[in-house]
Image (cartoon, rainbow, N blue to C red; front, top):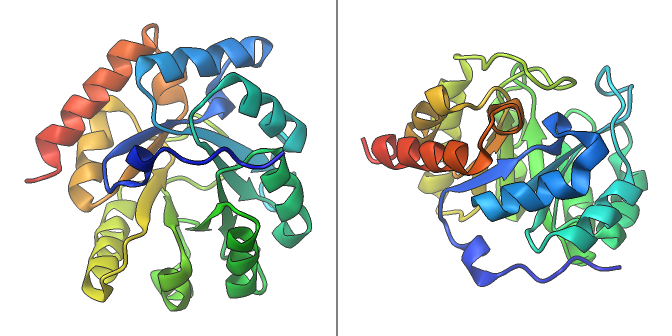
Length: 235
């Protein structure tokens, strides 16, 4: 199974919301994904954890493959695992449209990104809150997406780390100065109350788990998030 072609609209430099299934009800996962798609989500974010790189274990390629059958949205797969190169083919074959690896885990980051793109997916690079931007700067031109963690990865429901805002701003400036077109994604603690601040800092894609799935009305939550994004993004 190959990734579904991405709608040209999703490739535009528009602000996108990517609900993280880590906070969804796994007994109703297919229905949860359909619900956020109907509510206006742009991507579906899939957090893959191995219990080694981060202190938790979540899902593997079979879940990605299952999601591929229930949604038309791009699957935004975030590998928080050691030795990501060993699993690139499996996740892309399962249907990952975007495959993001951590700079802290990918020993040969450029080669890993090229392998992702060769197999037909978009290549993302991610870094933890304490990792400086200089670790990804040399490969930004090859990336389709750069993910800034706003929490220490491993668990859903954590509080957003305010110091990350300056990092998002610096990354946005770095990308714009070099004329690159990759998306800036932010993951961790994103809610209605802070999404505007993150948009103002220069983010394009907003990953939200509990900020969406732990609210009673997904459509209302996503609509309010978009209002905050529009309110702050041009300030």
